[in-house]
Length: 494
Image (cartoon, rainbow, N blue to C red):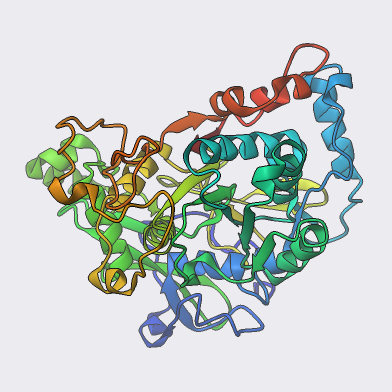
């Protein structure tokens, strides 16, 4: 029986014997960047899995965030102190969702919410307090308060943070430069409408962070809330006989059907990620006995029906690109990042994503990644402890010599004309705390000594909010607190 041309879920699951169209060798190899000018999803092409994900989510003509997604927006913030308990809070959230109307036939309104919207303005104010406390301690009044935010959505977080600064820290607000880097043209226009009439310190840059090419020499704060879960990942599998990793590619045939196949790794970004993982001694997801014993691998792979490849593993290669961008173009930044550390309803695999859509006002999870481009949200959990290790390692690496040659000396009251490190960074003391980064030449602390920045640490959502939030504002009459009790599967890196 012929299947309809317009399908949603193409594959039932992962197979150890996926066989692409025999003509796939002749298909054009493309990247997500190559497809930006396409009006419709491509046919007769092949690409890495990360390019498939990026194209599905961000293509300007048919991508999920460009055409389908709607951010849940509460017109008026909740008066939390008047809400009886968590059940009533959840009912109020459901009521506001219902205000978006009933879906018709086909994929429904792709509505998703963030803690910024559900817990406004107190969530944004907590983040502002975390940043301004460091700024006042380290840089005020000698440096401007410079913030860069990526994935700013409809601008609510920026608005709540800037309103807080204007009310509570007017001297800091006068020195604030707030930059938003936004890939979506629609969201960038919405952010301009919401922010620039009330806060002239806001600048919107409508471009991808992965195409950022301007160096920010000043100390700054880089904010990424609920962003990296939608960063594209690559898919790899290991040959269980040799433990050699293979990169996954997607083929799309003339009918729009998807298949996957695997080749030896040739992609530089995948190679870089795996090399960094080995250096940091983060083990791959392979049974220890298979790693240690070639004889056992031979025995295992010769068993009847034994797979020759490991289950798919999704590796955060685009996240690695972000960390390198921060190191290169924002050398004196401080990162505030938050996202999911675990997720339910993921597809099969290791570090696998949730793939879901909304149909007739109901969220529908899928069992495969390979679904119609643009109609499904694809989001991943993040191992924050491994992220911290990667991030700190990359920040500790020297800049390329070409970048160093282009640097222009920057005059600042916190700089020095003589290098404190000329005698070596152990001149004053041989002790260097493990919780601090190596000092930057020519940059001193308020004591006048070359002391490195504090290293980032991982916090649970509740730990972070207990430190920086005004918890009395979000406490319910029952004593429960949505700012602490929701988002248990979210962590912070700061």
